[in-house]
Length: 293
Image (tube, rainbow, N blue to C red; front, top):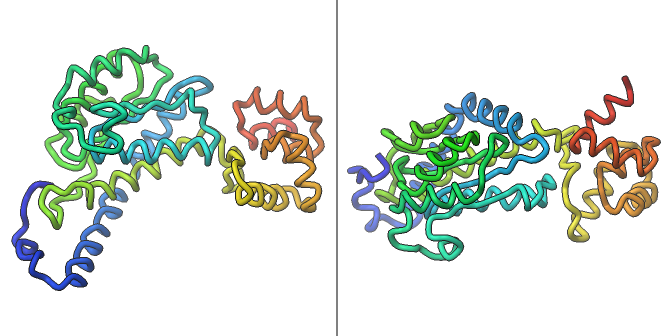
């Protein structure tokens, strides 16, 4: 479907620009509707991924071209926003790092390369591999998913067009049918938008299930600039009803660890706060609940 040239759009090159832009925007709104239809499947994938990842599992994104880059865009945000360790995040991109910035011709057709790169990771049952392909038939991505599944990792496949061998190859296959594009075959548009929405929801839900969100806030956030320091201060003040000076003191004492700072204000000693957070894998809600019980 993504490659079909619809009669309604054949003369788009002759349309007034505003009409063309409005049509493209309206068409992409269908992407959110397509993702909404698979919300249950995304929730199942998130629950399953969180159970596998535990304390040591790795989150791995695999894809080619637009889909691969969308995976990278999603994954790189998990460190700053949820404190996800770099050591537990990997990207497999057809064509390697060079393909992040430019097209590497023929790379997506190399099934054996996908297999080899996945096998080289030494995957285990604690790992989660997310494969992305708008067409659902990209050989490289299918190779990654097949090798990962054989190794016992949890495999999740996202595709936009049936029939989709990627969906069949993955343990959890999610078909997000977005249909034809305004520009035939331009899957960076509606299909890409749907993949971005789906990954936003999936990865965020995984972080929530892992306990890295507390009362709707990113308490595992990494503080890397003044803006985020101010956000952390406000977060601590809202969650503990403390003053700005108390929040600043707790942040300094904790080495800018928001969760530990909150526990300090709630009466924990620093050593105990760190030990409790380690025991509960960084889950602030679990630490507080354990103390209350």
